[in-house]
Amino acid sequence: MTKSKGQTQKSKALIVFGTRPEAIKMAPLIKKIEECKQIEPVVCITAQHREMLDTVLELFEISPDYDLNIMKHGQSITDITVRALKGMEDILTKEKPDIVLVHGDTSTTFVGALAAFYQKIKIGHVEAGLRSGNIYSPYPEEMNRILTTNLATIHFAPTEGNYNNLIKEGIEPEKIFITGNTVIDALLSVVDDDYTFENSILNKVDYKNKKVIVMTCHRRENWGRPMENIFMAVKEVVGENENVEIIFPVHLNPSIRKLAKYILGEQSNIHLIEPLEYEEFANLLNKAYLVLTDSGGIQEEAPALGKPILVMREETERPEAVKAGTVKVIGTEKENIKKETNVLLNDLHEYNVMANSINPYGDGTASEKIVNFLLSYLTHFKNV
Ligand code: UD1
Ligand code: UDP
Image 1 (cartoon, rainbow, N blue to C red):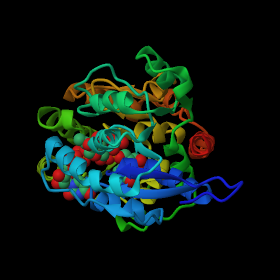
Image 2: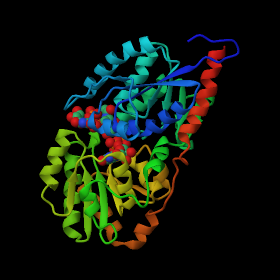
Image 3: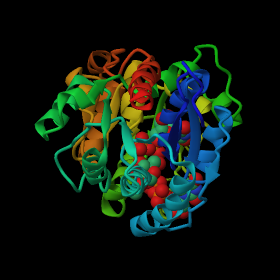
Image 4: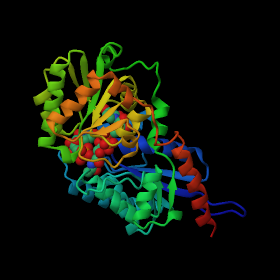
């Protein structure tokens, strides 16, 4: 685009994502960029996820400019990496963006950054600086984050702890911006205390008189024995507690679905349901008694809603809500999951200690902060 006298040339930001959580967390940012006249957003999805991604795009009314449509059932990390990398090349060559924005820790994140680096394009990493300290947990996300940090030009860190992690790895302070997490922007835009579900199963549940546990489970490092332990523990907890109902929207990965159905199917107080559209899920969290999960994003959302959350993983890259007492990391051993869940179900004092509404992840203005920074950063490069 040519620059007329006294006018600043418009900058172009190419936003890349591929999975449900990236879409939820990038949606508020895309909306803010759309509002701003000086930056042109170009949206490219790898579609590493398909149905789970599409419902988020629909909810936030995002029409991607490019869709690599790479998802295959039972895909390996290598499949995702190779197909996304190949697909990104032509798009970057054609669009020549001023910056590529990637989010978080998926294989799409790493590949988006790598493809941009190969074209010597600047990279902004949203949700930068989270670390567990173990490259195999979460796997491959911890390494995806480390690799993306090394490729990125600027780093948008949700918290001060994330900032400190990046400083420890030698990133220059002037390249890191603490913004809060855009997931809070998304959450606040959909949660409503008077919400009525579209899903008929969710509408029938008695949230006042039952202790409703919302559960999710999908992490690669939990595939196999840890996931069997988790499902067995949950089955036994329901057997031992009459007043409990479990709602488990099962991830679309076929092997997770098979195991969930095998161990938890046919249980009257366990509802195995399809993945929920984001607005439905966020409002379900808001009505839940407690949350059992191995998800990353839910560890940020549930504390903001004051819900105790038990994390079925060996470690977390999100220690903020653990320090505040709302999140407990309980591992994947059956007996420990049962013990910790039973404590929260039967000891009101312990429950109340954990049911704190805390929000270490920002006030819902993370996207605005990122866009304000991008405006001055990109304008500077356009004018030199
Ligand atoms: C991916 C990310 C993980 C993130 C998670 C969010 C990687 C390596 N993993 O893991 O970091 O936490 O997304 O959910 O980047 N499937 C469908 N439809 C969908 C989505 C998935 O059928 O809409 C099935 C497909 O069979 C697919 C499988 O699930 O092959 C696994 O998807 P994949 O993206 O490879 O891994 P996730 O475990 O979802
Ligand atoms: N989520 C959703 N529907 C569901 C389950 C989860 O919209 O049925 C949302 C949830 O609120 C959170 C995100 O998906 O924002 C988390 O995605 P996931 O657990 O798949 O990935 P992770 O955060 O672990 O990378």
